[in-house]
Image (cartoon, rainbow, N blue to C red; front, top):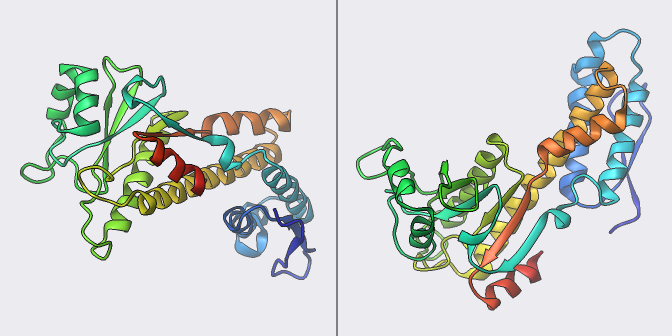
Amino acid sequence: MNQEPTKVVLPHSGYRKLMVYRKSDVIYQGTVAFCRRFLPAYGGWHSQTEGMDAIEAINGMETISKRLVAGGWGSERKMIRIIQGDITTLAVDAIVNAANQVMLGGGGVDGAIHRAAGRALYEACLKVPEVRPGVRCPTGEARITPGFNLPAKFVIHTVGPVYRDGQHGEPEKLAACYRNSLALAAENGCHSIAFPCISTGVYGYPIEDAAKIAVREVREFLSRAGTRCAEEALLRREDSAEPNPKGAQASARRREEIEVVFCCFSERDVKVYQAIV
């Protein structure tokens, strides 16, 4: 980790420089975005609140930023696990199914999940509206159903791209699978989610390229979640809704945290993910 502080000069003569120790560009950019959103020079809440000091807001964000980079909120590595195993046996809030567009089962992970969940999963998928004939979930999108007989509470179905040469929108569509699945998990109150290696089976996506996209999207999601925690905690503190700032931080963190498991089929896949994470 780079121990040199990065100075952010806020564009207002009354503000001092904010020192943020950088862990990653994502956290650094999130910190700057937070300041821009809430400081008066950008028309934030401070300009409408009497008796509030801009310096106090900066100090609060500086404290939160240091906790982020010290390994607290936004510590992506702590929230990512890589295992080799059977995704249908995992007791997580949601498992992700590498489905096809019709969502009625298939081969590989898709077939295994449908078999383990039972007939009720098939019936639930039948009820998902078609967006066009034969398509319930277009490539890159995601749908959610109960897990039924699975240990997981939910199954999030997403359709990965068929790999051609990487020049026909495959990376963007694969990234969308992860983003949309994580968003659905968060919307449904999930605190743990397991992904298979989407599109790397019969769809032919090279595991090295697919894993880089998967890890990147998960890290960005976890970093955004950490920033939202920081925003909520600081707002609660300033509004005096939470008399104990540590309690506000903890409650915000509990609502946003999601542990992500990459469940790999082979030992080789595990090593590929480990090298990236």
